[in-house]
Amino acid sequence: MASERELTGRLASFFPSHRDLQVGIGDDAAVIRQRHARVVLCCDPVIAGVHFEAGAERSLVGKKAVNRNLSDLAAMGAVADWLLVSLILPPTTSRQDLDALLRGIRSAAVAADCCVVGGDVATSPGPLVVTVSAYGHLPGRALTRSGAKPGNTLHVTGPLGGSIHGHHLRFRPAMAEGVWLAEQRSVTAALDVSDGLLLDLQTMLAASAQNGVAIGAELDASRIPIRPAAHRFNDGNALQHALGDGEDHVLLWAQRAKNALPDGGPLTKRARQPIGRVVQEPGLWLVQDGNRHRLPESGFQHSLSSKQQAPRRVPPKVQ
View 1 (cartoon, one colour):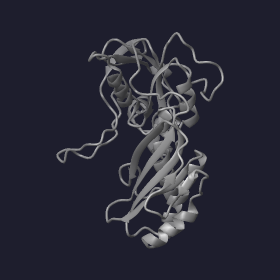
View 2 (cartoon, rainbow, N blue to C red; view 1 turned 30 degrees about the vertical axis):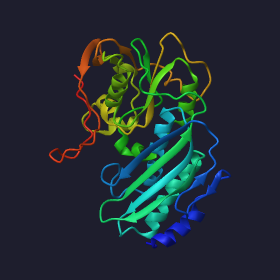
View 3 (cartoon, rainbow, N blue to C red; view 1 turned 90 degrees about the vertical axis):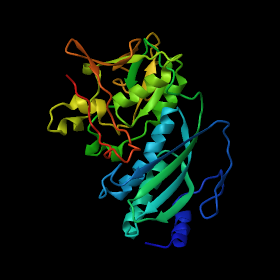
């Protein structure tokens, strides 16, 4: 692997420049000309052994590191502009693996029409860590998690479940969908489904509680779109995986039931169909085969306690 200075010199020519980039890779910090009044910022890492298997193709790891941040921007209704990339590399990293990682980062940035303007490189005996900070802007209003109300319908931009079979490395952030949804006044709340539909839905409901009064949601099992990969498990319950696997990186949104979305735009016909609704009764409920069951909390959560085991993605039990 090249030295840090040699690598920095290579990066300056590896990533394309931009007309608004006044000082780029190679200095202590980047200088950009900011044309937008409202800047949207987010930062997420990917870590070997947590977000991808240690032997995963490095170009896909690079794409994932960028795209999971872009999916957060999409959930806010933002357009991506700039990326900062921090690499913590094991000393055994080969030139080929590093080049593949950088190609994946560059490919995802180009696909989103944004620009890598800097970051940092370090080595560590620990696992490979790629941290991306994404900077974007709002062409309209900001979508947030906190506007859902009882009576709103719930929707997702794509199918769910089975992400471990490859989708977690190959997903496409719903950038166009996020901007379009932010333009629709009937859309009341949105977020990126990264930790599982149920856990992220609970996050939306908690953020949307008014004056400490909790609200809930009811999901229709027959309307939840299930990714074909969710059927590849031996447990025979693809619905469980759709509800709790996580790393789907689709957008979940709530909208006023009486205000249909206009024709056109980037949404599929399936995404326009509700998968459930927000209800006054606290908790999560599943309607299946004419029966209504309460669902437990499920999904992926990082543990900050040394007394707890490493987190696992455990799908919920469906009666």
